[in-house]
Image 1 (tube, rainbow, N blue to C red):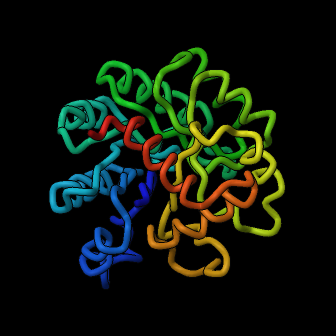
Image 2 (image 1 turned 45 degrees about the vertical axis):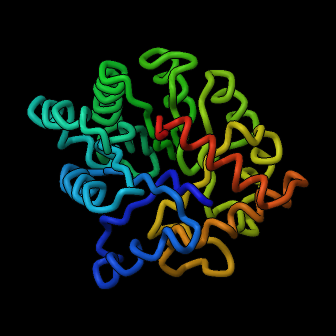
Length: 255
């Protein structure tokens, strides 16, 4: 049984067959999915999906790409929905310096406010961090703290950076990138990270693993991710599947 710890089934890429695809998951070994919000619209859609499918949970948060949309009213909207029992986390939130917009200070302020919201609500956080390792680490240390529940989603940094996040007590999310030939840094990090600190994810519809790279991704591709992690760590794929399933259930507080 697999747990997809980070997906985007509200994306328009699934508009033609969303119900058929999601409806097939229980019989195909997908036990749980967390659908991560990125904008207010995607958060609303994630709540609708979580209400419709017993195995699907929502995470609510404003992605750094949309940081400029998070005002006081929006923060109150998020706060009012975090008590829903199908809301598993605050996310995805964080910093993305790949593009020049939004301004970094706007991203940092939105990140800080949502970290505070997660602490207030007692929810885990799903962290997006691209080309922003040092600021992300500094923010997490200063504004969130050690040994609180956090996952660094779609981890793309070095083994040394992984060690710093692990030292804070956080988990690391790994998806299809681990199967790419040029993903040397991520592979080295996964070899180093203990299995009980890993979560499997797809970030679908993005980042499909080889041999499906460039195609629409889905939770059905998780066995390919588990197999690659298993090969790197010298384990059976079934052990990766079982341990990451338990890790995700514990992290998201799902009985």
